[in-house]
Image (cartoon, rainbow, N blue to C red; front, side):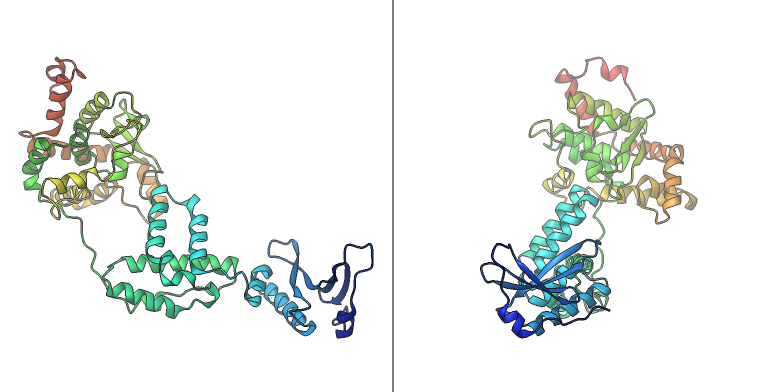
Length: 426
């Protein structure tokens, strides 16, 4: 075995670089060496393999700042850390107390790492949450190696006191994930936040507000007679008839509509569960799409924005905004449409049809094999339920129908022929 500690303190003190050479190196054994330069500067270096298998030459520091004994101690700690699967480069930074990464740095790096695996909306929401609650908080400047579970506990309790409801749990989860990344890349301890969550206030989930089905005629009348755009009126009917989530309904494009097979595809990038979803279209939904096509013109979006260029889709929260404007804040939401359908259909249909209702709502099945199988089947059974729901909706909104209103408006605007209403009767 090669001998360690070959150098002496005198050799270090009198080390020099021969004239004409870029540097001179003297080995102390065990990967440690002393490098001297023509300028007279001398540094300790360690040659060691990183976790990726490649060798790196790490500078421990100049001889004017650390002694030979300290250099050997650093060398031993780096070798030991490498044997335990820790990255020597990051361990050295921690040991030297320089270039220390902060909590804010780690959270931002985590967001960058996760961005390719998230949808754009998820990334924006997580980044906004991190900026509001972490990046701009006192936690941001704490070095990651000095961050403890007590910091998390104090932070979470303060958020509890401010009444942030469920936000504190989402922020804690974000912190935990960031430190999972830190344990992989920088050798920091993972955060076991399970104990912290035990001491937080438990907030009951609030369901999305929605009116009773019996109030649907009055709701449709309010929307039909409101001053909202023709696109929003059609979106109101379309959301009721297809039960899509706000982003899925508002951001989709015409290339996902199949009129021949009466289906609409929700692509992965729009779906909440990141799984492609096929929506069978009832005759009532097809009618809405025909009107939407006449209104959209050459726009690629099914529901282009009426306010700006048609190269942009309508805002995904436009229905929620509409409900607030017509005095239904706290009484009706865009997501409440799905809740209304679920409540009504679960009461009306057999228990065996519950899985069909859940599939229409595109609720994620934890059994991935069964979920993939189900997405390919039951289209006609789902179509049957949606046709039935469409008939209920048509009957209840007959006196004040958004689709009827838009149809008449399109005929007046000459975007539809005058004979359209008689030739396309229900």
